[in-house]
Image (cartoon, rainbow, N blue to C red; front, side, top):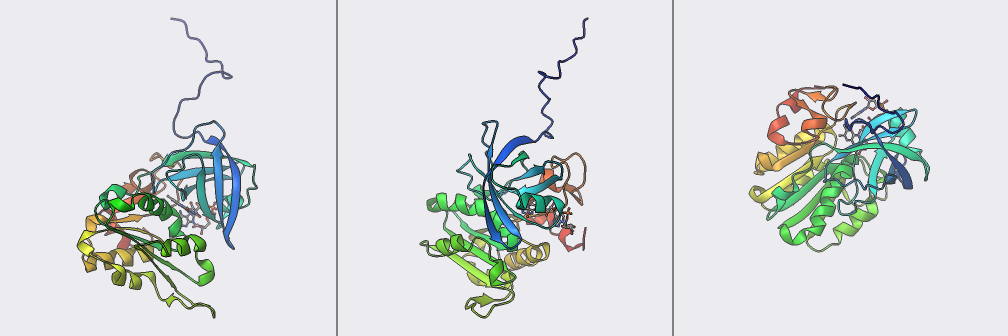
Length: 287
Ligand SMILES: Cc1cc2nc3c(=O)[nH]c(=O)nc-3n(C[C@H](O)[C@H](O)[C@H](O)COP(=O)(O)OP(=O)(O)OC[C@H]3O[C@@H](n4cnc5c(N)ncnc54)[C@H](O)[C@@H]3O)c2cc1C
């Protein structure tokens, strides 16, 4: 038997799921003081299709790689849209990437929102703060499938009026027929005439028929815990309440165990979970 050494110049690297693909920033938009949306395109000619709720690992050369949810329209596969808040080294570097800059992308990764469960039912999206980004693909999907849903309602809460994400889109959705958008802020500014209070207070009053409702919830963990409890108490079947969880991630594909939550690896088994799978784990502080 003759062993032939692979020519490193021509040998294809095995697809381990760890190799970032080259993308380029095509547009960037400042959303909030610390938050930017990037629109990116694949440089290898293969658009990145995704299902609502999935995420990618974004790699900034020489800085590092982090998990970011896809916040674009699943029907527009040519452009990868992601909204990033600058909280540390990598997210800050991503927020500063100029148009034309290259970066690495792995994915799409993780389990999606089970949107098909909402067919023939009322769909309620409950989002807090930046949690509107991972739920926005569900809203795009729902708008494209309006005639297959009983209704679509969006309940959104954030700290203050200047922290409202995608305000123009929320405004547009709120004037769409049959679609209700409830917005509340924790702290009002002088010119705020809307509702003040936590998002979980708004949820029960916006439910139409709890037994026939599917809810998708994303936001700070404490908000998701109380929102899920409130939805369940109001009569939404617990299997029809879905949450998207976050933990610090490294490999993103279930190898390293970095994002373990009880028996689950969030990257592989989530980030979207049915409420009963994580209900008890969410009551343990900082698990
Ligand atoms: C599945 C998934 C989807 C995500 N989607 C988005 C998104 O759409 N937009 C976005 O801006 N961020 C998102 N995140 C969070 C993002 O991955 C973290 O903000 C990022 O890892 C921070 O890295 P850094 O190097 O910038 O900061 P670091 O220096 O790593 O951290 C800075 C601070 O943020 C905290 N932190 C780090 N990671 C997380 C985390 N996962 N959750 C909460 N706090 C964290 C650290 O404890 C520290 O206080 C997502 C995370 C996951 C797991």
